[in-house]
Image (cartoon, rainbow over all chains, first blue to last red; front, side, top):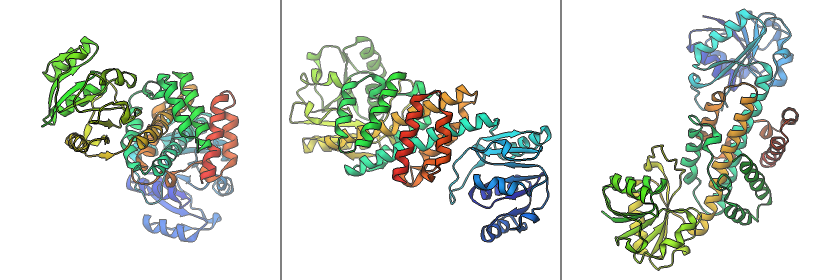
Amino acid sequence: MTKITMIGAGNLASHLSIALKCAGHEIVQVYSRTEKSADLLASQLNCPYTIDKNSIAQSDIALIAVKDDAIEEVEKYIDFPKAHTSGTKDLECLTTNTSGVFYPLQTFTKSSEIEFKNIPICIESNDPLLNKLLIDLGNSISDKVYAINSQQRRQLHIAAVIACNFSNHMYRFSEEICTAYSIPFEILHPLILETANKIQSISPSKAQTGPAQRGDDLTIQKHISLLENNSELQEIYKTLSDSIKKYS
Amino acid sequence: MTKITMIGAGNLASHLSIALKCAGHEIVQVYSRTEKSADLLASQLNCPYTIDKNSIAQSDIALIAVKDDAIEEVEKYIDFPKAHTSGTKDLECLTTNTSGVFYPLQTFTKSSEIEFKNIPICIESNDPLLNKLLIDLGNSISDKVYAINSQQRRQLHIAAVIACNFSNHMYRFSEEICTAYSIPFEILHPLILETANKIQSISPSKAQTGPAQRGDDLTIQKHISLLENNSELQEIYKTLSDSIKKYS
């Protein structure tokens, strides 16, 4: 059982501290700049809270789950082992010799329930003991704990943006087309899910299908001309088809 | 029970005819140009086959599941109700007054098992009776049967390429990054699945997250400069981030 001070009371802080409490750890205190959210989370956790940086309670570890640009401001007030939970910030943004990163790689939406078991947790630390503590903490809530250093985490964040935000943008374009032609978007749901499912077991480079992969230039040309009233999407269609062809 | 002549013996023809047989229909014959595949499928279905276009057996309907550019060549030999299964070809590529389209919207990979129940089937016909037959046929193997005309189907195919082939290309880029930095790609699997899962219940326009959606130009710039040794991906990152920002 680890004693944890939770810094932050937003989406990630809430999901994470509840999962940690359920796993048998003790949340000794919640800190947040906003009294309302500090109070709400602390009452869910049945623990005290503070909105005063100078009153942050000591524990085995402070988990810093605040916005990226607020990390450096609050971490100065923590003089015991600490780890941030950011995908973009380097380990070095924490200024002591007992610092780490505890980064759960998932999108957290406020209301939706999160099953931590399947969420990968990326661990890094400048201290062997803290490293072990973070790994144990990770293993207590997730089946997937990885050692990922700051350089890897930077690249991982780019990869996540590309795989997820950019894919979602593709979904959005396709929904737009469906709406314009009175096609229910749900008709694409199974195909979208199957595409994401497929790469859970085979490499995306082997899973590719479609006109660009087949080198079917006739269909590509037809599609591009059918997109004539959306020049932005037309450009993106061209660029991505060319790119797929280069790889196929 | 419908009597069906199966034209083609490839991936789609195989999956489709087996599903139809399991649903209680009778496959009266398999036609294929290739004796080996005709024989294989016919033996699975326990029915006769032919490789002679002039010997195609009459039935309630011929389902044409051959490559797009082979449809017009074979359909001339069929003088009873027929439907093709293509996402790209118009209804008009079939030359009789009793023609239709029976298009299952899914990627079919040879070995992998297909559960037709959740695969949307798009129906179109120039004949009311054939239309009803196709809808009934669709309902017998799938829970999701849609009336989709040729113009809609053309657009739906574009939407499917964008939502699926282009998303898969994003997965491929992200795998490339992972490989380059010795990060196991499986670390992104849950996030990719969650992204596809999310839009099953909420619109992609509401599901978007990430630096471009937040207008976090600092992170976008950082990512672009970190991609300096891959100018193609750098361009795509820029283009798609700009596009997301326009919508957010």
